[in-house]
Length: 213
Ligand SMILES: *[C@@H]1O[C@H](CO)[C@@H](O)[C@H](O)[C@H]1NC(C)=O
Ligand SMILES: *[C@@H]1O[C@H](CO)[C@@H](O)[C@H](O)[C@H]1NC(C)=O
Ligand SMILES: *[C@@H]1O[C@H](CO)[C@@H](O)[C@H](O)[C@H]1NC(C)=O
Ligand SMILES: *[C@@H]1O[C@H](CO)[C@@H](O)[C@H](O)[C@H]1NC(C)=O
Ligand SMILES: *[C@@H]1O[C@H](CO)[C@@H](O)[C@H](O)[C@H]1NC(C)=O
Ligand SMILES: *[C@@H]1O[C@H](CO)[C@@H](O)[C@H](O)[C@H]1NC(C)=O
Image (tube, rainbow, N blue to C red; front, top):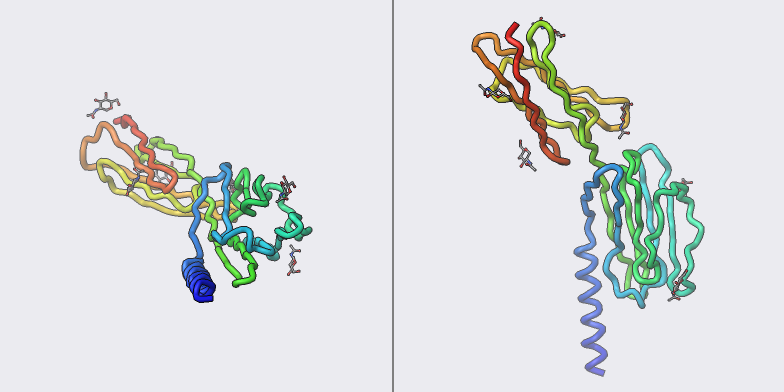
């Protein structure tokens, strides 16, 4: 008897701990890659049903479920064919998203129902898109550096610093942003300039030898 008490206390403590650590996870994912989303780590033999709830921007939330006792997926109402169950459902009912598109930005939550409680793990999935970077000099001598359609917005810096105007424009309503910066170096003789685009997907520097015409 004491032994049972210890075990159930331990289980209670364990499930309380799991409840407490079952937080929302921020998950940045590069566009066009494959992402795996895992359910909370609950002893799998005790789980009855695992459900994924998917909430995408501008869409009704949809559901998918897996019953452990019958080893079956029940027909949910998620229709995106790029979101699938990972291969070993009976071991861990993870979701696989691939290739990740910009429309997969959203909230994904796994709920595991077990006799000792319900366990949740949520992911805020943020799709990252690297910007396309260009650096050109226009006829009047100004130099323009552009970071086109990045997500989130990139940052532009110059070496050496010039007299610059920098602006951001949302691009086509899909969450990407185009940033451009236009500079001139009138007062000094500057032979070369470089534009550095800083972005979570990686930084890029472009160099340009200025035409002093
Ligand atoms: C899926 O089902 C849920 C509950 O039955 C409903 O609220 C939701 O709108 C449905 N989603 C879609 C995309 O049909
Ligand atoms: C569950 O079903 C899959 C195939 O759908 C099978 O490979 C697996 O062995 C089954 N697992 C159990 C525990 O029955
Ligand atoms: C230089 O040309 C660009 C377009 O090519 C224009 O936007 C900018 O205003 C011009 N700058 C000056 C100082 O005339
Ligand atoms: C976002 O929209 C812009 C403009 O329509 C397009 O050029 C760009 O490729 C889109 N980006 C993604 C990742 O879909
Ligand atoms: C400018 O760039 C060119 C080629 O990138 C290099 O050969 C040259 O030394 C640079 N000049 C200065 C002053 O940095
Ligand atoms: C990119 O640049 C930013 C600031 O400009 C810096 O904080 C970051 O460490 C750089 N990232 C890489 C991978 O070099």
